[in-house]
Amino acid sequence: MTRCNVAQRLALAVDRASAGQPSLKTKRISPHSLRHTTAMHLLQSGVPFNIIALWLGHESTNTTHRYVEANLEMKEKALAAWRRRTSSSSASGPTTT
Image (cartoon, rainbow, N blue to C red; front, side, top):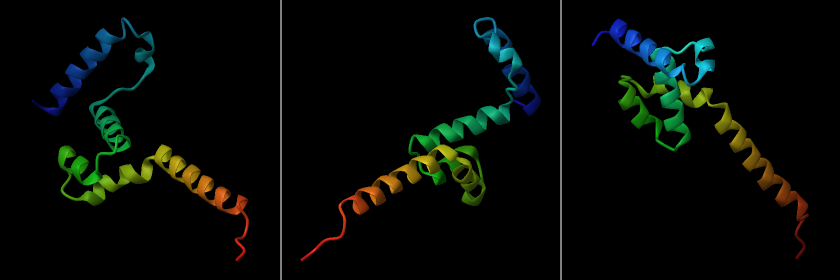
């Protein structure tokens, strides 16, 4: 199946789905956006990015590493966890012996 054929089939599927979800008509849904969204969901689900690279057909994990850098939600979670650790250690105060 060619890229053009995939895009045409996706456009037909989006058109049919927009009957039940009218907001889809205003969205730009392409094979690339579908691929990117799937990769981000896999990453957020804990799938290692080297496995995602294989699934996407990337020759190098460096290409896939952009998904890691782009994942703001994961960064926010890590920052929140760090803040919880540092605030709980400073709340307990210095230890005396």
